[in-house]
Image 1: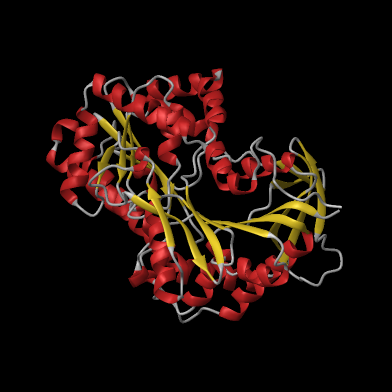
Image 2: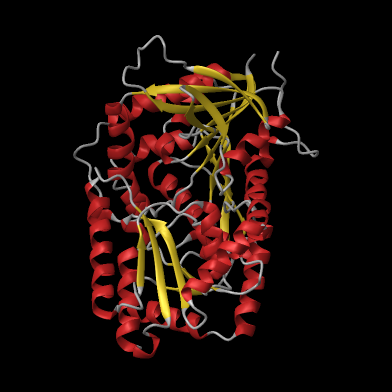
Length: 501
């Protein structure tokens, strides 16, 4: 039976684990809720399917199960797993996506590396995704494609199946034309995205940039614009815009341009934040920390876009200028190590470890270590407890499509206290204007922001946190998904699709 909704995403929609010598599939417990939210739409159609990739030493192995049927709390759906060899994954993901695309998307032109890119392999992998989606889709079905490593899928799919409706969501920033057009494959990529019915971005700025890129490369027709949602307009911030494109014409077709920020699963985090184990863990952390010591929490991946080194250097300057804070403040810096085989990330991890070591060597004592550097992922149930104890959550990426950690922090603060310090170059800053907004490229801005957060009176803390929590709840993961799929839903919220025969 063909599928009314096909989701194309690099991740498989479950956790594949071995138990008692057998492979079993367990529901994904991702705290940011994207995978469960996407699967939630399967309940609105007769049949749903998911296309992902899976490692395979030999893609031609006849024992490889390419299509499997899953039945979980979201219903029954099929999963097509594309067998990619280690060489294909290295070329398609680690080299093309991470060494060529990633730095350009985040406006780090100096880190762009074109030389090792094998463009035919990138095309080959994207074609495989498109073929799998085309094979699964019923007449008139919706195919929902996710993220930049599948840029070419919409164009291929439109040729294979001109009847289907295609939606694409971009989970990273989208840069300006002078940055994006560094890519030699720019025209092919944009032409593919314009084969969609809907192209979605987190915030208006990324949508504006995309349309400018399209206009610079192709004969794009009239652009329809509208006023930005007032909740996302805050004068003076780096990523704020007042007008946003909502549709463009290309080759006689109208393409909807959507800007909607991904949120968190509010209910999931509320449940975690209020359960007995979390409260006990938070109390134990506070007791170990001591009543007179403030905790600053920073959580991110080891990536040059995340500003980890710059943040640690700001903390070092704070301790140099404020001896009165020695023994009174601690930074828990969680920087989850990336693939060590990728030189750029290995270098950043080394720099982070060097600065953290220097701070502890210069200021630490037997009783007090100013920086706790954590390089492995913290289980989410434990992270929620740290959110609840942290006096300050310090999130200062140099560039970030959205950033969900800052939203998780606000959602976890059921006590209504705490201060969020947030980079204006994170997409989330457009929504969370009641945070202490800072510029991570400025020493003065960074240093002033962290001092302001540490000294903030309780009344102001609570007023800001109240506003943060209201926004995070209003624009949660479900609101994002509904907005992205609204083009394909009827007035009752059901899929506006021909039923598969």
